[in-house]
Image 1 (tube, rainbow, N blue to C red):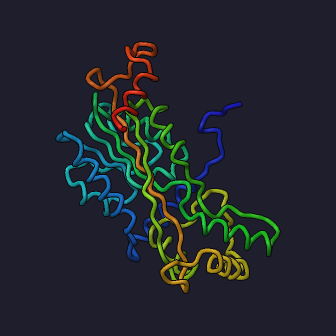
Image 2: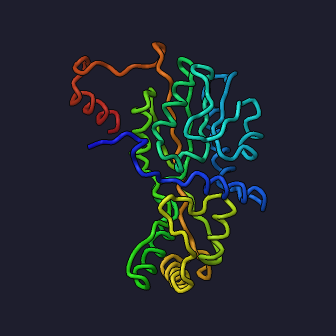
Length: 279
């Protein structure tokens, strides 16, 4: 049976997430992946033959994203977004969607805020992000404590995230992925960086006590042994996947797929013509 989103256990401890972000901003935010994501979005917008005059920006990191899109109205990534219906021709959802308990609800709200033929662009961390750390922590905890604890946020696969665009009512949906590898001295260096990114463990089901030193020490050994940096084996390398989601508010002016059975040339004939041209 499917339950309403309000009846489901919360994935994210929202208060803890906001505390982590605030601490990261106060102590010196590590914004590398934000800058990479912002560069990619600027490149995508440059390829669109459109001037956007009423953009909105949804993010938990306004100090980073606001200056990159100074014309945008900036709103937080709260469960209920402060967006007015049909008020914007562009909505960017920046590096916060992976923490949403209801990601499709977030995109639906962005869709409602778009004018006809307005553009939605989202970016968030994807499924393989920190896969190496997840595996090392899981193995270490299983060996030492005989069980597993929620430590790394479950993040969506590109196919599932792309499907959210269609569910939200957006046209011409596209999902693509930027695969990044990052090098760290060891697990503890990685952990400090994650906290400085505001991306520590803010899951509602997380342990509320410090992890035993033995678990972390063993996880550090496993990570170093299984995932050395190819350029410097004394360091470790982990994955960060950035997933970009693009869709348009429906409009009669947009291209439409042909009606099934309306093609005038059989597929076999078309393929034969291609083969002749290649010979």
